[in-house]
Length: 259
Image 1: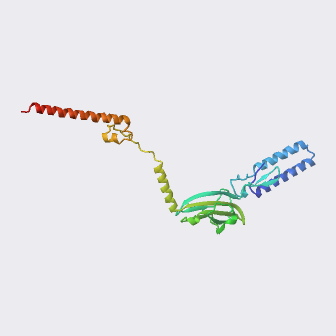
Image 2: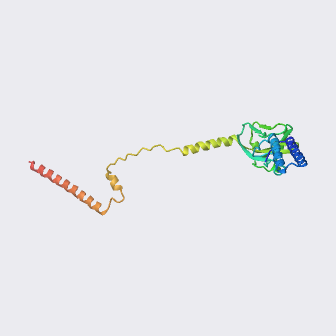
Image 3: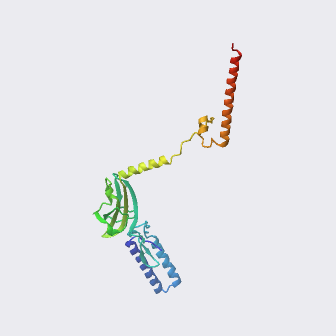
């Protein structure tokens, strides 16, 4: 397969084939062997084809690239890049108040006689053309939005036209974040950062064991059990006995030293 960029190259190819046919006719009239005449003619054609200008490569992902058309010798037909006119949507994120610059230029070659048509649909991310309304039409390939407002949230479409034919269609989805929402988002991020922060080291509490007081013991619900009551009675009895003995001892001491 050989590739050529424009009609002038194809015309050169036609001339080369015409000369080959004429060359073979002359060889036939001269009764030259067919096995010798055909290889010679093929060599002449290959030399002329090698001198022709090759078509530029197709540049994906989209666009009707006329300059990249090539001629397929096997089928004697002109082939194009077979790329769609519509380009994939480009996502653009902007804060309210920022400047937004949209460019409809393409990487492949276009003619100088071209125009640009800008369209817009609010709040949607779509390629459905019937939803768009026209913004402006002219020769400027770019669109500057300054400042970007919440009303600019949506999809912008640009059509590059040559001789009233759409060559490429580009889409830009402008996602505008309002300042109020931006501040709320920052507060949410700060709050999440605080919640997710690692806990501070907790010092181990030192427990000081101390003996419970009599009041604490008596306030316990199981203090006055049967065994506890017996011990309490024995304790009171012992104390009473000691007091009695002490009183008797004092009485005898007092009577022994009396008159």
